[in-house]
Amino acid sequence: MPANTLKFTIIHESTVPLYYQLFTQLKNEIQNGTLKPGDLLPPESQLCSQYSLSRSTVRQALNQLVEENLVLRRRGKGSFVAEKKLSRNLNHLYNFTEDMFELGIYPHSQVLEHAVEYATGETAKELKLNEGTKVFKLTRLRLANTEPLLLEVTRIPLYLCNDIVNEDFSNTSLYNYLKSKYDLNLHKAIETYEAVKLNKEMAQLLNCKSGASAFKIQRIAYLDSGIPFELTNSYQKGTACKLRLELYANQNKVNFSRETTLEKRSNNN
Image: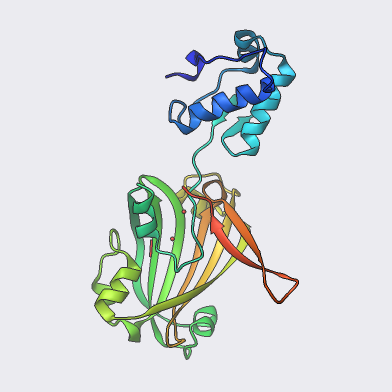
């Protein structure tokens, strides 16, 4: 249903504030799929006229939708239904392929580079390798359905999986492959997040503007033996990612520990 033909009821005699009624009605239309990502909402003047509301009431309802990341305002163009943000559960060793399927989203990878190189600098340091040790390098553009979400560069010591260069990772989960093919017991990962701006090349791949905000995520993953088996540097566009921190009080301490999760909706490992 086009946004400009939406029809619902606002009860002026209700004790529920008018702005909240409008906010709830529009939110329901977004969540049930009547209003889809990219749809243009009716202009404020139309909502005022159609439901006999003041401009301040309509604006308050739209502001609430913006605060909940359900609507985006574009100056001079209007208010649009926002794209859903994919969420990541970071409390377990993350597997992009499996988590996307659980969300009903088809995961796909476009392999941009698939090669063997020699470890230097950061790679040698983080993977605890001697300079010049062979590593497998895999560069992928990660997609949910057809939407590019993540540009990912992964390096793995070649001695752990010497036939990996023969595998096509367009539709294969890297983590499942390492477990099934090489019986590697993947144990834990440490991720570091940094806010960055995308350069022109990265922005083109992620289908956004040069200089757009993104999360740079460095992941170092370990086997149960303590050996680091993966170094991944990835760039996830900020518009597709939302982080939520859950804080817990430790029983014997005053400070708080943190668990980080993404709220449900974007790495293919």
